[in-house]
Structures are given as structure tokens and as C-alpha cells.
Image 1 (cartoon, rainbow, N blue to C red):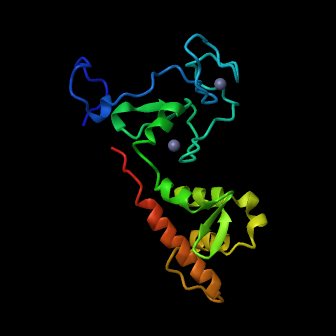
Image 2: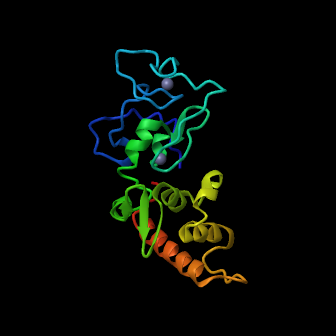
Image 3: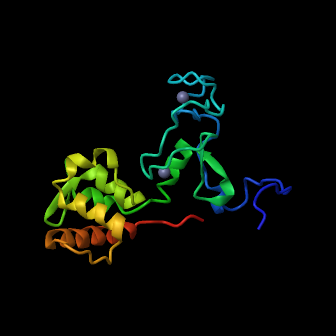
Length: 195
Ligand SMILES: [Zn+2]
Ligand SMILES: [Zn+2]
């Protein structure tokens, strides 16, 4: 199906379809750092780039705090609604209201400060959330958390998958892996597919 380059004029009075759901106005967001600019400025106050310009090639590009995706070289991410094409970070984050990556309300209900309670275990909240969303574990900081059965379980799941029966397995790790798997399944009930 051809979505782009249509010669049919846009009709704002036509009934709402996914492609016409109101999105934040384009061009008001710095594509290099993702900061929302006020309408009266033409340069980003944080990084000095003209609003609407593509990021400099040496810039560290921003990531979405919800899904951890980093914007592309154009400073944009693909919209969850295919017909919108690529959108800036602020528009992308707004789309998560409609397209959550998981059941964050449930996850927040398990939070205890910086930690998350998973059945009888505890682990760093941010580390667990990133694992649930991306399947990745922050290797650089993992060492600090080696005492946590949940972190061990996440590493093992990443390496072996949920059905592994590794030699020398410990009951504690096996139970923690089952708990993480249950949490993941519960969390992913909140996912909305792209349209
Ligand atoms: Zn900027
Ligand atoms: Zn996102």
C-alpha cells in the first residue's frame, strides 16, 4: 500500500483516522537533544542548534526514557503510526500514551523507592524495567548487583532463554527466573502493537 506521496489533498475536516490523530507541531523540538523549544526561539537553548536542523554528526543523540530507543541521525524515530513517518522525540514520547511498551502502572505498584519487589526478591527498578522492555541488562553496572538473584536470573534468561535446564543450576536462581518470566508476561499484557 502506498502511504506517502499521495496527491490527494489533506482534508482536516475528514473523520479522524490513525494518521490524523493530533500530534505535537513539527519543528518545535530540537532534533539534537530532544528539548522542546518555545515558539519564539529559533535556536536550541541547550545545544545552540537551529530548531529543525539535523543533529551534528558528533552529537550524542537522546534516547526515549520510555522505550530506550535512541533517535536516528535525523534526530527522529519512526512513529508508531506508520503513516506519520518519522517523528521527533517529543512527539514519539507523546505517542507512548497510546502505545505503551508494557503495563507500567502495574510495574510502579511493585516499586519500593529505587527498587522493585518481585515476589520474595528485590532488584534495582530501572535495571529490571530496561530488561522487561529491551531484554538487555546494563553490563557496565551489573557487577554491583551480582548479589541479587533477580539480576542473576535476568542474565541467565538472556543467555539461555526461559526453558533452559542448565547443569549446576541452583533452586534459588530457577525460582527467580520463573518469577522474572511471570513478571515479564504480566508486564507485556500492556503492550500495544504498532499500526
Ligand atoms: Zn538542543
Ligand atoms: Zn519511546
